[in-house]
Image (cartoon, rainbow over the protein chains, first blue to last red):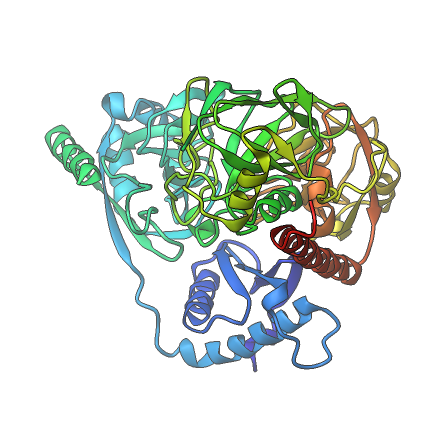
Length: 247
Length: 338
């Protein structure tokens, strides 16, 4: 059965259409999203501008004036959907060459001034701080999407045992690189910003750097692990990432 | 070849048509709020129509030109003043070295655009000159202009510029022809057309009617990121449901839990997690961008097909406008027009 029979299309705007492959937060559903993104990257349709993969599908932005209607489609967007469906058909073949996910290790200095809420998270879940670090750093996480702010990853797969509600009063400034927990989610702040996440640590890596060829460190579909590091390692890595910035 | 910012105005930023290709890294598109006016300003001075210009908001800056320049001011909310004299919006203007360009508020609209022949000489960040205020990059040092800033203008040898300079003889000169704004009527109480959004059916029938029949007041908490509206009526979902974040676009009408619509504008985040009730048609976005806080408006429902046709029509008018402007310029160069 062709997959597109399951795929649904939504008109986001006259210049954007969303294809949805299913509902919910599910790594298998997201694997389809990543595969389809790869197909489009390799064979963009005429008029294609860019795309945003999400949990359940992809939104395609296009230039309606560059799309050429081949049949008697009622709207330009219908023509785009026809082209997307053709490519969804190819997805069946593409799935056979399973996608090799990009794996990224994020070093984290947990606790202390870098993770001021580590105690609170441990206390809220009846755990020792070392157990929180263990539970947070033993899993491989999936980056479902980048959105909300430059380089901000929506990461799934956190252990329920360390889930903690957001802080009742958000901080006015969360430092860049802060690793936090908000409910069942974990994430990293790419830039200093106000925020209500429980902060358990900090990474010396830059999640977003305007001066890199690809500014965002993480991309939708990446697999991420967090690795506990010492203060010395943190300082050294931080210096190195500042230097690479200057060069 | 520079312009000095003597007074910065309320919020003056460098904006082009937007930053494309980086949404999936969380980088928003930014760009001009009123793209029709941006493009018109560029067309009038012979630039690429999608090039960078200054976006002026509420009250314009005072800019001292340390060089001769050909410029055009479009949009609304203010009109150009040089050497004590007011000039019309939407006409090619020659300003001689040493003169000051300032602005006088007018009754309608909120944003004006200043394009200079040759364009501003600032570096691109991620393929665009647009200012991304929140992230602090792009445009002029990633921020709104401040007093004392010096903007470089690309050296220009455009025939339009040369012709104007020759005719102007060292004083200010405005051409007698120009381009009208696409803000077609100047009534504040006009409708903004929308089509049904992804979650339209999730709202109660009563709320769907309310969205169309309510007069909405644009609050002062409205900016380049989003327009927030106030009304007594609130919009309700049939049943609460969890919206997973996904891509949004310029003009997406989201309804947060307090039941008042919010329209995402040029500096919207790349993804949104509120129910998307409707989408402002692309052809009305520039007009919406000129709505002033405290003004009121209504929504009018159209089909997606109509929305798309209106967009194509608007683009056709822009192509015609561009052709019309080059025709006028060519007549000038041949010595036929003024």
